[in-house]
Each structure stands twice: as structure tokens, then as C-alpha cells.
Length: 460
Image 1 (cartoon, rainbow, N blue to C red):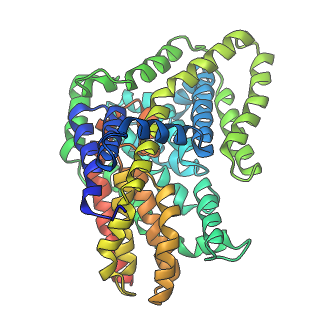
Image 2: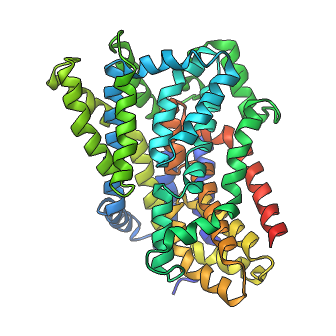
Image 3: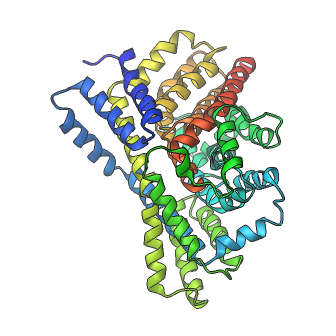
């Protein structure tokens, strides 16, 4: 029988190294999965890969994700083609007088759209990138601000998809009584230290209190020297799937209505948020209801023929294929890591340090490593909560503090991992190469993570 060992770290290391060298996240994830399966059973490697990929594709979460991401792409294509997105850009320019004010506008918009990190990442990035381009802000910097106000903001707001999911898990694992999941979740919000530090770091970076350094500084210098309209492909020596999506959106802007109305942008966004809340924070149902109202409104205005509208929506759906494929590959990789007992190895390695005083910090560290290695934030929480929480009760630890540590690790993994869904969609929405975004923001995520780790030690 397979025992947890340090060898389970090999596939994540392979993925990170290949992602940096090849700058092809999908290929890197698939190669990492094959390496892990070869470690398990070299003879049955391909058949096991087929089984793992089919298991992922029939998963309800993956089906939901494909429909939601594709739906966002279709909605964005409509907003762009009708001129609504351009009209919002013109409106926002009144308040954006320079690089800092445009990034602060991005930050504020990210806080306002708190319902879901997918909605946040795609909407804010797509909305603001032409404004930040005007002031020669690198797409990497934009993607960092967008990503920092996606998962971290959603974690801190109890009215979000994250709160609903994690609140349900707390009830399922008997940590909260029926109907009290969100109430227990809210008790842990003050202790979600990574999310707090990640959000607070953004205005400090934007205002220059914390200067740009490392890869982010180089990206910004290149954007200032080269051109205002930053093409994400210029940071990538290899042609990637990201360019297909960027090209599709750029072509939509070129064919957009020059006399677009602001309400044609604001109304669908407001409807999406309202319907998502109405349907108990279900973004997919919110999208369907938004289309049901928006399409007839656009038709009454005679903005475009119905056939063209459907065609643009399909183009928008297709523009999300690179993001969808990356997340699917990440889920396959996570399944392989689970077979190699990576979560058990990390927990077993750190269990000697799990006392009441050190438990929150150790939980944050262990879960952050797992979330970063596997690209799974929700999945890691679901797997480890039945292990961690009984231990927290046994050592008489502060339960809200431990929950805060778990959720801090989840939000860290969502933002920092090269191939997590939030990172992929923040790069997609901002029109930035995925690996460039991941590499440039990584030092800032580590700063927030270090502050959180120290915070858990001090509080405990």
C-alpha cells in the first residue's frame, strides 16, 4: 500500500519548473500529471491518465465551471460589441487622471464586485485594461490588482460564493449546526489574515508606499518604454493559447458600436449581481437570468441582429477555452496529487508542531503549501477540514482562528498558484500572459503570506 512520502512533492516541483521554462501552463500541468502517474504505475500510466481525465470531465463542479466561464465570455462579448464597455471606459476616464488613480479605480471596482471571484476577475480586468493601457500601466500590474481583489475580497465578505461554499462545509463537518454555517464563518472573518494583508497591500503598492521590485518592476519599465497599448504576447517568447483569447476580444472592440451607451454596460452587470444574490449566490443561474433580460433589451434597441448576437456570444465562449482548459488540467493534476497522498504527507510532516499555540500558524503554512502545489483552494479545504478541525478541538485551539487560518491558506493558494482558476481568470480578464502575471505578483503574495504567518503566531 502506498505510504505518504517526500516523493509526492516531485510532480508539483516539475509543474512549477516547466511552467516557468516553457511558459505553457496547460502542457506543464499535463506533464506533471503524467510524472505522478508514472510514479504510481508506469505500465498503466496512460490508462490511468484517461481514467483521471474522464473522472474530472464528468465532475459536476467542472461542468459548472465550464458553463460559468463560457457564459462570462459570452456576456463580455456582448458588452464589448454593443459599445457598452467602451462607454464605461470613457466614463471612468473622468475619474482616472493618471496611473495611480486608474489603479485605485480598479481596486475600488474589485471591492464593489464581491459576489464571486470569477465575476470579479473577468469583469474588472476586461473593464479597466484599456484605461490602464492609456496611462502605460503594464498588464501585469493590472492583473495583480485584479487578482488581489478577487479571492481575498470574496473570502472577507459573507455574501459571496466562497462564504456559501465554506459555510456549507462547516455544517457538513459538524463544526456549525444546521443553518449556522455563515454565522460561524463570520466569526472567523477577523482571523482571515492573508486576505486582509493581500487587500491592504494593494493601495500601498499603487500609491508607491511599497515600491515596485523584481519582475513587476521590469514589466512596468517595459510598458513605460514601449507603448501605451500593451500586448501581453510581448512578454512571452512562445506563442500561447492566451493570444487567441486576447485576439478575439481585441477584434470585438474593433467592431464595437462607437456610440455605445453606458447603461448597456451597467444594467447587465447590476442584473448579474442582483440575480446571483437572488438565486442564493449561484452565478450560473444569475448569468442565465441576465441573458434572459439583456438579450431582449438589446434587440429592442436594434443594436444588432439576433443571429449576430448569438454569433458574438459563441465567439466570447470560445475566447474562454484557454482558461477552461487550464483549470481542467489543474483538476486532473490535483487528482494525481491526491493519489500520491500529498495532503497526508504535508500534514504528517507538520503534525509534531500542531499544539494549541502553533496550530493556526502550522495549519496556514501546511494548507498554503498544498493549495499552491495543487492549484486547488476549495478542494484542499474540503479534504483537510475533517482532519484539522478535530485536531483543533483535541488541543483546545481557538476554533474561529483555525478556520481563519484554513481560509487564509485557501485564498493564498487561489491567488499565488500559477494555475489556479482565480489566477488564470485574472490574467485572462486583464489580457496578460498567465505565467507573466503569476511570476510578477508572486513576491507580493509572499509578503502578505509572511505577514499572515507572523500574525497567526502572535495571536495564538
